[in-house]
Picture (cartoon, rainbow, N blue to C red):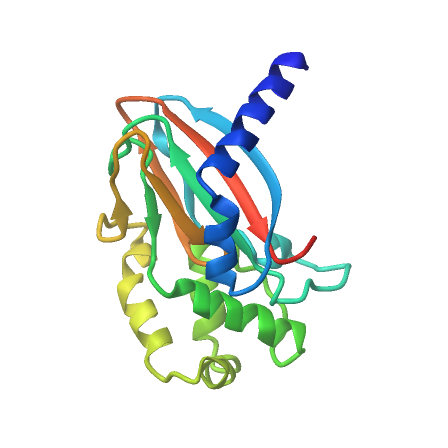
Length: 206
Protein backbone atom coordinates (compact mmCIF):
# COMPACT_ATOMS: atom_id res chain seq x y z
CA UNK A 1 0.00 0.00 0.00
CA UNK A 2 2.86 2.39 0.82
CA UNK A 3 4.47 1.56 -2.53
CA UNK A 4 1.21 2.29 -4.37
CA UNK A 5 0.88 5.58 -2.47
CA UNK A 6 4.43 6.55 -3.40
CA UNK A 7 3.81 5.77 -7.06
CA UNK A 8 0.56 7.74 -7.01
CA UNK A 9 2.34 10.79 -5.61
CA UNK A 10 5.02 10.53 -8.32
CA UNK A 11 2.34 10.31 -11.03
CA UNK A 12 0.41 13.22 -9.55
CA UNK A 13 3.56 15.35 -9.46
CA UNK A 14 4.25 14.44 -13.09
CA UNK A 15 0.80 15.66 -14.14
CA UNK A 16 1.49 18.98 -12.40
CA UNK A 17 4.96 19.29 -13.92
CA UNK A 18 3.62 18.66 -17.43
CA UNK A 19 0.62 20.94 -16.75
CA UNK A 20 -1.86 18.36 -18.01
CA UNK A 21 -4.70 20.27 -16.37
CA UNK A 22 -3.99 23.33 -18.53
CA UNK A 23 -3.99 21.19 -21.68
CA UNK A 24 -7.27 19.61 -20.61
CA UNK A 25 -8.83 23.00 -19.79
CA UNK A 26 -7.88 24.28 -23.24
CA UNK A 27 -9.37 21.26 -25.03
CA UNK A 28 -12.60 21.44 -23.00
CA UNK A 29 -12.65 25.26 -23.20
CA UNK A 30 -13.52 25.28 -19.50
CA UNK A 31 -12.22 24.17 -16.12
CA UNK A 32 -11.56 20.43 -15.91
CA UNK A 33 -10.64 18.04 -13.11
CA UNK A 34 -8.35 15.05 -12.74
CA UNK A 35 -10.63 12.06 -12.08
CA UNK A 36 -8.10 9.24 -11.77
CA UNK A 37 -4.53 8.23 -12.44
CA UNK A 38 -3.05 4.78 -12.84
CA UNK A 39 -0.34 2.85 -14.61
CA UNK A 40 -0.18 -0.68 -15.89
CA UNK A 41 1.89 -3.16 -17.85
CA UNK A 42 0.49 -5.24 -20.72
CA UNK A 43 2.49 -8.49 -21.10
CA UNK A 44 3.66 -9.91 -24.40
CA UNK A 45 0.65 -11.41 -26.17
CA UNK A 46 -0.69 -12.25 -29.62
CA UNK A 47 -4.06 -10.71 -28.68
CA UNK A 48 -4.96 -7.02 -28.78
CA UNK A 49 -4.59 -5.24 -25.44
CA UNK A 50 -8.18 -4.18 -26.16
CA UNK A 51 -10.14 -4.69 -29.41
CA UNK A 52 -11.86 -1.84 -31.25
CA UNK A 53 -14.27 -0.18 -28.79
CA UNK A 54 -15.59 3.06 -27.34
CA UNK A 55 -15.27 3.69 -23.60
CA UNK A 56 -18.40 5.80 -23.18
CA UNK A 57 -20.95 3.35 -24.52
CA UNK A 58 -23.35 3.53 -21.57
CA UNK A 59 -21.72 0.38 -20.14
CA UNK A 60 -22.32 -1.81 -23.20
CA UNK A 61 -24.88 -4.02 -21.44
CA UNK A 62 -27.89 -5.57 -23.13
CA UNK A 63 -30.41 -3.86 -20.87
CA UNK A 64 -29.93 -0.56 -19.11
CA UNK A 65 -31.60 -0.47 -15.69
CA UNK A 66 -30.39 2.97 -14.57
CA UNK A 67 -30.49 6.43 -16.09
CA UNK A 68 -28.09 7.53 -18.81
CA UNK A 69 -25.27 9.93 -18.05
CA UNK A 70 -25.46 13.37 -19.64
CA UNK A 71 -23.57 13.09 -22.96
CA UNK A 72 -21.78 16.39 -22.24
CA UNK A 73 -20.02 14.76 -19.28
CA UNK A 74 -17.27 13.49 -21.54
CA UNK A 75 -13.80 12.32 -20.54
CA UNK A 76 -10.37 13.16 -21.87
CA UNK A 77 -7.58 10.63 -21.44
CA UNK A 78 -3.80 11.06 -21.51
CA UNK A 79 -1.63 8.03 -22.29
CA UNK A 80 2.07 8.50 -21.51
CA UNK A 81 4.13 5.57 -22.79
CA UNK A 82 7.13 4.30 -20.85
CA UNK A 83 8.00 1.84 -23.62
CA UNK A 84 8.20 2.15 -27.40
CA UNK A 85 4.90 1.29 -29.06
CA UNK A 86 4.18 0.27 -32.64
CA UNK A 87 1.58 -1.59 -34.69
CA UNK A 88 2.81 -4.89 -33.23
CA UNK A 89 3.74 -3.60 -29.80
CA UNK A 90 0.72 -2.07 -28.12
CA UNK A 91 0.23 1.22 -29.95
CA UNK A 92 -3.02 3.14 -29.78
CA UNK A 93 -5.24 3.03 -32.86
CA UNK A 94 -7.89 5.75 -33.07
CA UNK A 95 -10.40 6.50 -35.82
CA UNK A 96 -10.41 10.27 -36.44
CA UNK A 97 -13.68 12.13 -35.73
CA UNK A 98 -15.32 8.98 -34.36
CA UNK A 99 -15.75 10.80 -31.03
CA UNK A 100 -18.25 13.12 -32.74
CA UNK A 101 -20.35 10.17 -33.86
CA UNK A 102 -20.07 8.64 -30.38
CA UNK A 103 -21.32 11.89 -28.88
CA UNK A 104 -24.27 11.97 -31.30
CA UNK A 105 -25.22 8.42 -30.27
CA UNK A 106 -25.08 9.27 -26.55
CA UNK A 107 -27.08 12.45 -27.07
CA UNK A 108 -29.74 10.69 -29.16
CA UNK A 109 -30.13 7.95 -26.53
CA UNK A 110 -30.12 10.46 -23.64
CA UNK A 111 -32.82 12.54 -25.33
CA UNK A 112 -34.77 9.36 -26.22
CA UNK A 113 -34.57 10.04 -29.94
CA UNK A 114 -33.24 6.54 -30.59
CA UNK A 115 -33.54 3.33 -28.61
CA UNK A 116 -30.62 2.13 -26.52
CA UNK A 117 -28.64 -0.82 -27.81
CA UNK A 118 -25.15 -2.01 -26.82
CA UNK A 119 -22.43 -0.37 -28.91
CA UNK A 120 -19.17 -0.87 -27.00
CA UNK A 121 -17.59 -2.89 -29.82
CA UNK A 122 -16.91 -1.53 -33.30
CA UNK A 123 -19.33 -4.05 -34.84
CA UNK A 124 -22.15 -2.90 -32.56
CA UNK A 125 -21.17 0.75 -33.06
CA UNK A 126 -21.51 0.28 -36.82
CA UNK A 127 -24.80 -1.55 -36.33
CA UNK A 128 -26.40 1.27 -34.35
CA UNK A 129 -25.39 3.99 -36.83
CA UNK A 130 -26.40 1.85 -39.82
CA UNK A 131 -29.92 1.26 -38.50
CA UNK A 132 -32.42 2.96 -40.82
CA UNK A 133 -34.37 4.17 -37.78
CA UNK A 134 -31.28 5.96 -36.43
CA UNK A 135 -29.21 7.22 -39.32
CA UNK A 136 -31.14 10.38 -40.21
CA UNK A 137 -31.52 11.36 -36.55
CA UNK A 138 -27.77 10.98 -36.01
CA UNK A 139 -26.92 12.87 -39.19
CA UNK A 140 -29.12 15.75 -38.05
CA UNK A 141 -27.38 15.85 -34.67
CA UNK A 142 -24.01 15.82 -36.40
CA UNK A 143 -25.18 18.45 -38.91
CA UNK A 144 -23.15 16.43 -41.40
CA UNK A 145 -24.44 14.02 -44.03
CA UNK A 146 -21.05 12.52 -44.85
CA UNK A 147 -19.25 11.65 -41.60
CA UNK A 148 -21.26 8.50 -40.87
CA UNK A 149 -20.93 7.24 -44.45
CA UNK A 150 -17.17 7.87 -44.37
CA UNK A 151 -16.84 6.13 -41.00
CA UNK A 152 -18.74 3.06 -42.25
CA UNK A 153 -16.54 2.89 -45.33
CA UNK A 154 -13.29 3.25 -43.35
CA UNK A 155 -14.31 0.53 -40.89
CA UNK A 156 -15.64 -1.97 -43.41
CA UNK A 157 -12.59 -4.14 -42.60
CA UNK A 158 -14.27 -5.30 -39.37
CA UNK A 159 -17.14 -7.01 -41.23
CA UNK A 160 -14.98 -10.07 -41.93
CA UNK A 161 -12.94 -9.74 -38.72
CA UNK A 162 -10.21 -7.99 -40.72
CA UNK A 163 -7.71 -5.43 -39.48
CA UNK A 164 -5.94 -2.26 -40.61
CA UNK A 165 -2.89 -0.24 -39.59
CA UNK A 166 -4.28 2.97 -41.08
CA UNK A 167 -5.19 4.43 -37.70
CA UNK A 168 -2.10 3.36 -35.69
CA UNK A 169 -0.10 5.89 -33.67
CA UNK A 170 3.46 4.60 -33.26
CA UNK A 171 5.70 6.44 -30.81
CA UNK A 172 8.77 6.17 -28.62
CA UNK A 173 8.94 5.87 -24.85
CA UNK A 174 8.11 9.25 -23.33
CA UNK A 175 5.61 10.01 -26.08
CA UNK A 176 1.95 10.67 -25.28
CA UNK A 177 -1.44 10.60 -26.91
CA UNK A 178 -4.47 12.61 -25.78
CA UNK A 179 -7.91 11.42 -26.83
CA UNK A 180 -11.63 11.67 -26.23
CA UNK A 181 -12.81 8.38 -24.72
CA UNK A 182 -15.99 8.53 -26.76
CA UNK A 183 -14.13 7.80 -30.00
CA UNK A 184 -13.50 4.32 -31.41
CA UNK A 185 -10.03 3.03 -30.56
CA UNK A 186 -8.02 -0.04 -29.62
CA UNK A 187 -4.71 -1.18 -28.12
CA UNK A 188 -2.79 -3.37 -30.56
CA UNK A 189 -1.05 -6.69 -29.91
CA UNK A 190 2.16 -6.72 -27.85
CA UNK A 191 3.91 -9.33 -29.96
CA UNK A 192 7.53 -8.53 -29.08
CA UNK A 193 7.67 -6.41 -25.93
CA UNK A 194 5.45 -5.59 -22.99
CA UNK A 195 3.75 -2.21 -22.93
CA UNK A 196 3.98 0.10 -19.91
CA UNK A 197 1.72 3.15 -19.82
CA UNK A 198 0.61 5.88 -17.42
CA UNK A 199 -3.03 7.02 -17.67
CA UNK A 200 -4.65 10.28 -16.60
CA UNK A 201 -8.39 10.89 -16.95
CA UNK A 202 -9.88 14.41 -16.95
CA UNK A 203 -13.48 15.59 -16.95
CA UNK A 204 -15.39 18.84 -16.55
CA UNK A 205 -17.30 17.17 -13.71
CA UNK A 206 -15.89 17.40 -10.18
